[in-house]
Image (tube, rainbow, N blue to C red; front, side):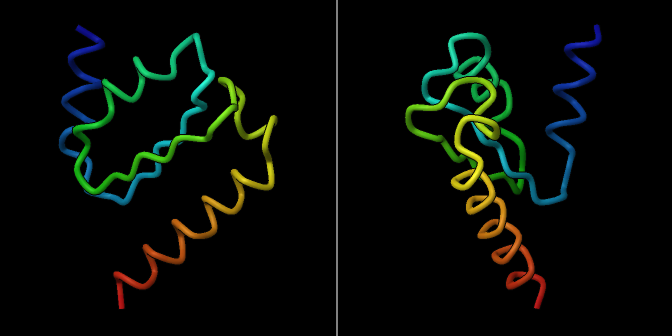
Length: 78
């Protein structure tokens, strides 16, 4: 029941959403992307060679992705 509720919320969410996953994430990477790929107004951003804690493994790349995502969101609002 909880998983259904989470999926329903994800499908009705209208805010811009950045989905980042490490291509070497063996725990949740592709499974999470599969569950989240249908979210409206979302962008999927793989980080090559990173695992589950991609923000720790490649912090500069992660912050660059976030910065560019936020810039794009702001530009769409104007």
